[in-house]
Length: 221
Image (cartoon, rainbow, N blue to C red; front, side, top):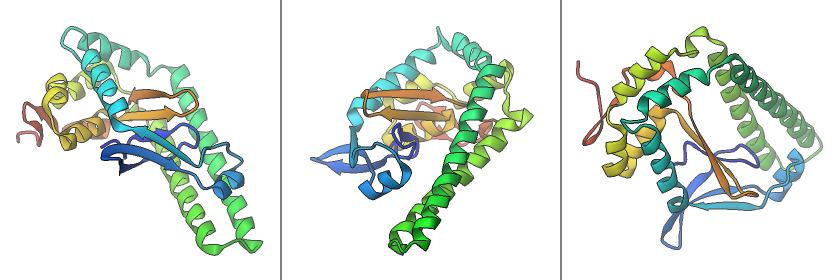
């Protein structure tokens, strides 16, 4: 359910869903040679059980979007788009792009040096995809339309409907869609055993879908 939004804090890669001992887990597998090539300290496998994180995320979202707090949450989301936060995020994305480009140079040198082509090509593809995704994020961040005012955020949140109700009764697919619409991103830090979650609404989500008592449905014409 979280496989598109749960990231490993050690390497910034998406964690993959899998079933282990009849329970859903998320795993980040980082081969030793990949870690050495990237100069990253990373366990060979990082696991996170889904039932340890999803209820906590749902409780946090339900609390922040409850009727008695929703206005305060919207105001905070608007205020947190200030210049300092914007500049810090832009710097983080630029560093991510530079790191991807550094990895690409390393991988190509390894390929020229006779490393196993199948493994190195896979690494190159992943690094290139990550670089392109970061470049797209940077472009969106720099676009004036991405700096939402409070009225726009209010519109987007209300178009999603009753967030608390869908979190309480929706199936996993509807929850996953709600997470996507909210722009929810969660990062698991294995060393600290903590999860940091952020909600980043995007203007291109306006009018895409809404939450009803039965889940997410297309908006009425």
